[in-house]
Amino acid sequence: MTDPNKEPQIDDMLESLLANYTSVVPRPGLETRILASLQETAARRSPWSWNFRGLWAGASAAAAVAVLLFFATHRHAGPQQKKSVYKPTAPATSVANMQEHPPAVISHPRLHLRWQVRSLATAANLPPSHRPGVFPTPVPLSEQEKLMLRYLSGTAREEVIAQSHPENAPQTSTETQDQTEVLPDLAHIPQIPGNTR
Amino acid sequence: MAGQAILGENVLKPAMARQAVANTLEALVADYAQMVFRIAYSILRNHHDAEDATQECFLRALKHQDQLPQLRSAKTWIARLAWTAALDKRRSLRPMVSLDDEQSGGLAIHSIADRAAAPEQQVAGREMQQMLERLIAGLPEDLRRPLELSTVQDLNSTEIAEIMEIPEGSVRTRLFRARKQLKDKLAVLLKGKQHD
Image 1 (cartoon, rainbow over the protein chains, first blue to last red):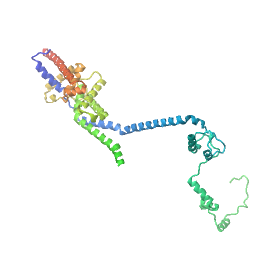
Image 2 (image 1 turned 30 degrees about the vertical axis):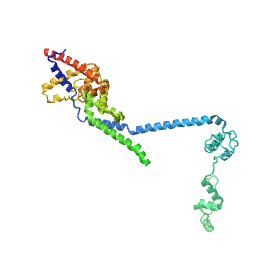
Image 3 (image 1 turned 60 degrees about the horizontal axis):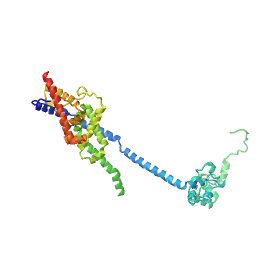
Image 4 (image 1 turned 90 degrees about the vertical axis):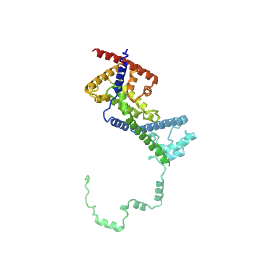
């Protein structure tokens, strides 16, 4: 217990001591150091990290949707697809033939449509045992190829050759004569068998 | 128009929000850095550790910047961050903490009273401060914590209650009990000195 006479004195002393307990001044530049450290931390936590989070979320959502779609479509057509095993009917099967005459085992109309769509795209990716007998795998002609064929059928052969080799265009008879004069006659040079030079 | 709207939504608004948060944090540092330092110092009693805790406090503010717009009182929020950061720092430190800041290599405690006092008075004042620190360190934790916060002159009992998340009445009761215990111990010590 404190002495009642000295109590006000001790009170004052305690108040004074407590008042000075945290009357401290930090080192100069504290605010600058704090701001620098905040800027450094904020720079490290760049906004890209948030963008990547969004990217990851979007990618995972897309993957989940893709997986769901895959299972939905394959569960629906799964047992019927087992029947549609590809069997080449003839060695000279072409994609055009396959499109016209799909294998008999494909009976379902939806599968028939899918077969028509897929036949062209998958022909090149089939395993060797399942590939058609014709190589390269025939595909429908493009517009450019069709134009080229039309042009070739309506043009003389010499003209086509001349256009395809403009530097070796057919020469006139006089030029041919001049060349024969310039070239030496090689008929009299004896040919030694085994001489490869 | 749609492009401008998308640009505004995706680029300008977040950029403005980031700028606003940066401005707010800068304002918080300007307004409360000293208070945060004093809160940390009242608990850690060391300049270097108090500065570390101050930096940690503002880093936590940056981390929880999304709470800034909904705050009722930024001062209490930052004071609580400072208090928890200082307590975490004290837990991470060794149990033995030097009470003499000069011996630990830090700067001197520049108390306001010390600056104007004579050398003998300064020495006596420091002795008394060290004695008080020892007395406060000997208090039970539930009394010591509100007392430490009450020595930070920027905080009143309502704010201390918000910082400690206890009722204001409890803060007042604990402060009264803490001062009573300190007074009794101080009286005994002074009596002993007079006898010596």
